[in-house]
Length: 94
Image 1 (cartoon, rainbow, N blue to C red):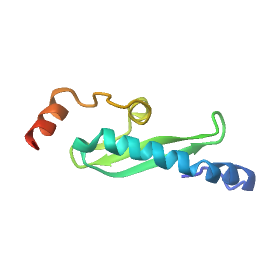
Image 2 (cartoon, one colour):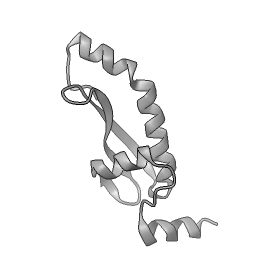
Image 3 (cartoon, rainbow, N blue to C red):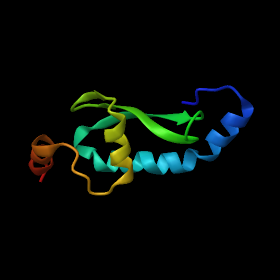
């Protein structure tokens, strides 16, 4: 989502979509056990001029709107994302 109709903002936002898509793929890979069905990003044109995960819709936990949690998932490989519940579901698949 781009919260602006200004052409300059939209142009800069669109130029960063590839990096946002890579970050989104990282979140999806990190949180496979949550069953992400939809991941929504918002372009922050007022402060950082970058894309941020806004929320995720998951089969396991419903809507996840904890932005610091989602940002951590996109930035760090191997982050533990669910404690025992996530580990239990990951172990049950093997």
